[in-house]
Length: 292
Image 1 (tube, rainbow, N blue to C red):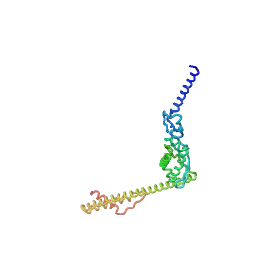
Image 2 (cartoon, helix red, strand yellow):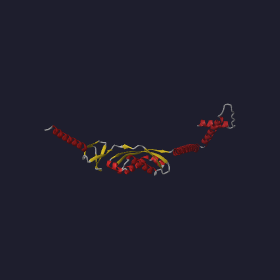
Image 3 (cartoon, rainbow, N blue to C red):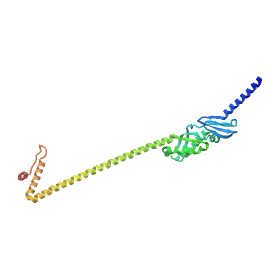
Image 4 (spheres, one colour):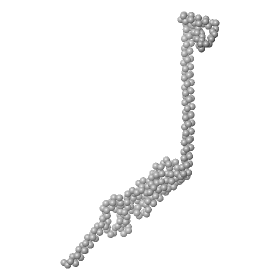
């Protein structure tokens, strides 16, 4: 065989081998775990390839788009909104999303990030416009839930899943902040006055209770004393009934002695004048004591 024919035959074989290699390379597509490939055939959507080894028709099918399915975060956005009580606030939001249907994302929306940011801004303004400032500050969790639900519903046609939508901060302009601070100080002063008034009221109530208790105790003591005197009077009456006049004279003499003892109390330099019959009272008392 001439060498020219041999070389020509080898060239053909080499060409066929190269063609086979190219066909195989074109037919086999290895898709990474974090991506999905959108396949077109003559400019029309054919299929979406998932992670792993995939086969396509070489030179007919082509990879039109390589779409990442990793979760993405939009840059934090800040937009103005007006509450139901006409307060201007600046709301800072953050959104996380991921592509779950690449065929929708690449054929239905051009700028995904811009579209989501605009959608979130509109929803935030709408929801804050339904709430007063106090509600925005106290019910932030409810506001976040509403924003997340509405954003998820609106981006569904784009093959996107919103995994998180957060309202990071709600800021006020300087004039509103100063007015709220003044209102807060006034409220604190009012509460302090109320607390002080309640303290004075409680003090008066406690004093009244103490005075009432003291009066009750005094009345009780007077009742005990009266009962004791009544008992003593009863005993004396019983003694008079049993012993006659002698018992009565004894009680009178005893009272006279007690009265004279009270008169004698005082400083050592004072002079005590006694009536003429005072000695008789002492004598009678002593004689009666002896009789007892």
